Length: 398
Image (tube, rainbow, N blue to C red; front, side):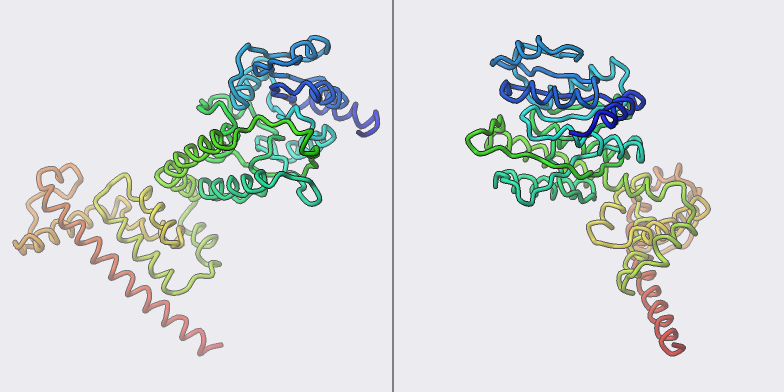
């Protein structure tokens, strides 16, 4: 549990950081009082959310001094309880909140780990990664955790060892404007995925965990209903990730950097085959010309990710559509359209700006699609030959 001096120091750090502990509870009368007592050794900033318990929870809470209590008559789910805890914490001007279960599986002594982590890396969301070795962990929990870890990686590109742990530290002030949708267990998936999409760092810290014997365990997880809800949520999140958020996160990574910085950071030191490099260049040129102005990078990043192409090289090549180049692209698109439509003329009776496209939309679209294929293929072939030549010369000089 730690000595008194350490407990006093940690309590002061909780206050300095404006951090509290939120304990959502539903029918955990056997362990609740001890969990609260353990947390009180480290901080008095405690919010207990009574999620419509039908046992003696209300009586137990009425006998505890110095804690905030949120209570409502009907059980609405763990996610709803945590959200109500967040709401109360923000009303009390807390900036951070640690959530821990009321079933006794989490050790209050690990609160020090979360406080140290957030001191070193503020505005991050930390998940307590459980030590599974030697623990009597339910087999269904192990499978569910691996399942959750996989989909979190698909949705965010981040690999974490334990995305299902309920022992977490949330930067609630940084998240206060977010609107949440889930009320049950799946909320704990929604919150970390959407936090990552918002640009909040999500990381794990090591914690210990206690699994009681099978006959002592109290769980409110409903294998079929809750797993179905989690599956539906993941389906929605994966769709949103590939259509919007993964491309936006990649774009955010490159935003504000010069082409030279991107080249040095992501291209020069990249271990790519000549085919992959040439493919990224050709595809970048293709998307830079393709007639979907305003969506070229968004869709291009998504496709580059699916095709496993170097996104930095793609981004550099896609800049063929920079403003100074637009008149040339429009002109060549019109000319290409003219030839593809059987007119075959280099003369263009239109102003070389985007506003004039509407008057010649058919010729422009046909020509731009044709030009994007021609130029993309040409850049691919030329890049491949040049890279091959340089690598050959490099071998001869080695």
